Length: 171
Image (tube, rainbow, N blue to C red; front, side, top):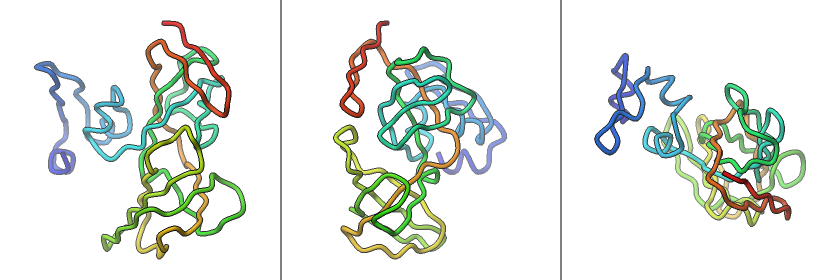
């Protein structure tokens, strides 16, 4: 995928024998047709959310949705947050969502940090990609914020629990 995104003017993604999306590499990455395509194209943090007007409420906060939100209030959503949208702050108190470092990898131009957030609604660590070296020891307390708009898609009919509130979405 990296090579196709870096040299192509236009990329077609084929899934199950059909074309899932045809777009420029930039638009494909920032506006994937669905969450499966988003994960195929690049690293993805996927969390549950609830539509709240033109935003989506998630365990990572109330987030702006790219291109606006076409969903009714209370509708269950699947939300994509790219790792470069997750900003990490090396302190325990202050604004943002609290968490602890569970992995860290230095790659020269950037660092990839795994953060376990303090929420039962997120079972997997949240991945952050930050410029340069961010020296954080395993277990270090951090705060995270999501910057920029995220992508969100309506979920199938189901009940989602977020912040101790159950919301049912009817298909």
